[in-house]
Length: 513
Ligand code: AHR
Image (cartoon, rainbow, N blue to C red; front, side, top):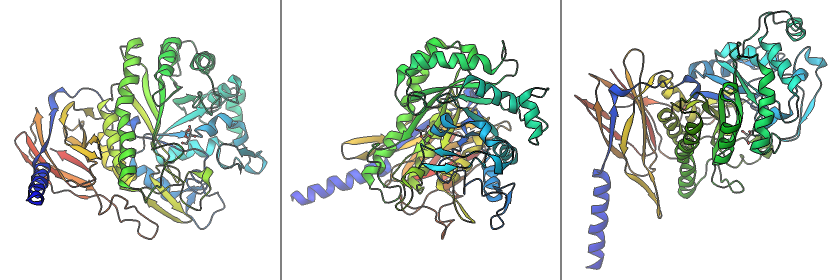
């Protein structure tokens, strides 16, 4: 009898779970804030095989098709992805990097030791010209991270002059001598990286003064060259860092304040990239979704000092961070990329879209072969990861107007803890089409969504989905297309009501016309 009662309870619970609907209302007519395409930025550090073997295989390489040493397959894949900007050369590496070592004849360039990442010798064969020319090939905006930690003001302003000055000057003459007549006109400049840590272990008060000094010399009185300076920002929930910088740095001297947050379980126990448990999955997603609270709180502090939202919040390092793949150099941060990473990417981009009034730039860490990479390479082979596919599906939101939403989501329960199962965002593009991005992070339960459109007059819905049989699934060099977007048939539009059925751990992007 007791057993029977238990069965009934379980059955009704399951039935309830399947019937409970998630409700989303999109205020279509209220769409006004632009989702800055720069939210779709990436990050390329001299770390492991991101640059060497990833982007760059050397001019002499006859096995891997390349243009001036830069892999053609990687360039093509990033073009298709429409990456908005690319941050280089670090990360922690940036504050050890002396750009003059990376120009001129390659056989004359001095080498250095990459102290942060594996202690390997860096021969400086990939330098300023290589990077900026590569950005032109990809069709992306460069974002140069300047060395504040171990560099000088003079060194950074020389770099600005070298890459941006069209007239006659010692640095622009040197550039011409090295084969580049016209400047590259780089807009985005980081003034140091993680100044609270590998960038110099500074206090926010001290860094704010250092920043002011650097920023003063990087441009003229009124920033007539319009460079966008980005101050090294907070480590995750260090809200005091943001408070001090907003208070101490004159707002006409700063374009954006950075923020770094990784989806990590525990720094000394990160867990495997592929064979993770559901508990590890839940903890990773908890850390990823914490981004919402982080940007809300940092933005609220910024609002106090800058209600016009002139200064952008630039999340220039985000993504999942796990233990390195067995047998690889621990300093190279090489990890595989599964459907868990697709969940992180979809949910994080939704958060950025919904906060696009303040979050106007972001950089996934990192592009190739490092951390939550969009591309993995092995000799002449290249694969696209689930994260790549999410970012490609989502790029329809670039420069579109964000549609505000209200959401009531079912919970994804694990033990005594819960997370919202559904994350969503939407935008209207210049043609009037609306795109809705949805993520169901629940690894076991499908979710029914009842969506109401307040405004708009759409006749058709189509969509794409990214999902797989197992959460741990990933693409490999042997099976490169195991995970790829497919046509989605689970959405039905009737007037202003849209019903969607999402499988467990799936990402869906809908187009309404
Ligand atoms: O992305 C890897 C490292 O993480 C970066 O070099 C550093 O800025 C951060 O701590």
